[in-house]
Amino acid sequence: MDKPNTDLPVAYDDVAAAAQALQGIAVRTPLLESRALNERAGGRLFFKPEPLQVTGSFKFRGAYNHISRLGAATRKAGVIAYSSGNHAQGVAAAAHYCDTPALIVMPEDAPAVKKQGTAAWGAEIVTYDRWGEEPREDIAARLSEERGLAMVRPYDDRLIMAGQGTLGLEVIQQLAERDLAPDRVLVPCGGGGLTAGVATAVKHHCPRTDIFTVEPKDFDDTARSIASQSRQSNTAGGNSFCDALLAPEPGQLTFQVNQRLCSSGLAVSDDEVAAAMAAAFGQLKLVVEPGGAVALAAALAGKLDLSNGNTVIVLSGGNVDPALFAEVLAGN
Image 1 (cartoon, helix red, strand yellow):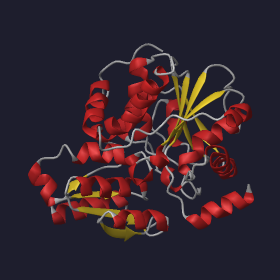
Image 2 (cartoon, helix red, strand yellow):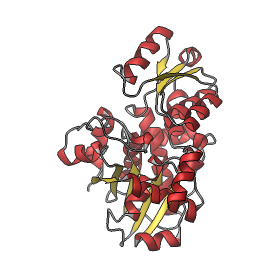
Image 3 (cartoon, rainbow, N blue to C red):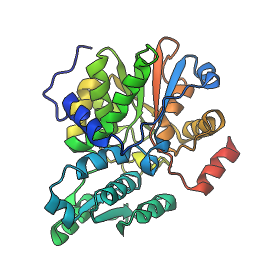
């Protein structure tokens, strides 16, 4: 694939600027390798472990990049976000660092560990019924207008995508330190902001690298959208324990990027994800949440031929309820 054009909603310069903004604030997470996991996958894998990031997921990168760029008056008034948990915690933490009040709209059934993590950063939480009639976007929009709060969207935002893209930039730099480059990158995908940012950074330096989205089975809207070159929605009634990746459809802005820069999408079952969580704990000594483990699940389940070249696996988060994690380990 040729080097991408610059007419997309997020550009490489945006990612480079975000890297400057995040320097000394976000964790430059390491790039790990495991001989045992290489042997299981049949190729050379490199892992980017965002459970080690501030708040335990990549979401802090984009949230801080967005909130830190707001004007002083806007920051003083406060911000609002809607999220099942990881974006909530990222916004809460970023708001804390920027001395900004934060209100987070979260589903009632969000994992307790994510609610607790959000509250611990000082954010106010308003809950809603995930399956109710009023969409979370409408709830947040109403509260934003009532209280005069700036909206920080979870993925469909240039500054959010750019902040998430710093993960991809770090991957390129860390592989270059070993005189290597990625042949393919597997990225967990919900609304598509992480994929869009990572693809923007990686494709700038390595235009021939293949970018693959990975989603839960029955929530593979981005994979189907890339295949059809038009945005597709998920069918109502599906279920997965990958709570971080249950967006109803790709974002408008994120899809513009991902349909141009991604090769295709992959889908994995909950059982495959559970096995990947156990493998990450056993071999990498990492606690990875279900949504954060889908890319590893795709690799271990043989969704792609990984026998040639270097494959980067993004482990996007580690915020999983202890009881669920113990159940996964006991069953694997």
